[in-house]
Image (tube, rainbow, N blue to C red; front, side, top):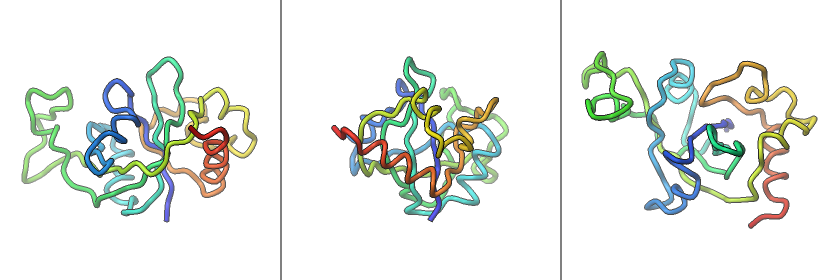
Length: 156
């Protein structure tokens, strides 16, 4: 089992949106970075743990725990000319971008980025490295366990 941090802008898809979705599952679409795409395509497996992270918002942070709920498949938004994520070079025969489904598992307390920066067990986390902007990044089992402990303190 592997662990991942996946960033979503909450005005596009929030953890509350996932909780409200049928089967508490949403498609992870719109990834347009090759390294993040390769993580989904080549390294993720059904059941892998996901830290659902809210980015580009007033208080960025981990909003909940999720899991990878599907194998990779072509991201439909790449084919839709009306989509912000449309890619004119992508074709049905040769898709360039990948989606996976993500299922909500548990909602704990919100863990802000500012607090994460103060936790010694997280100092090597990809998210916290200077210049790191990946929308999907690997998380070690030690980092995963440290964050789970923090999320479960004062759980809603």
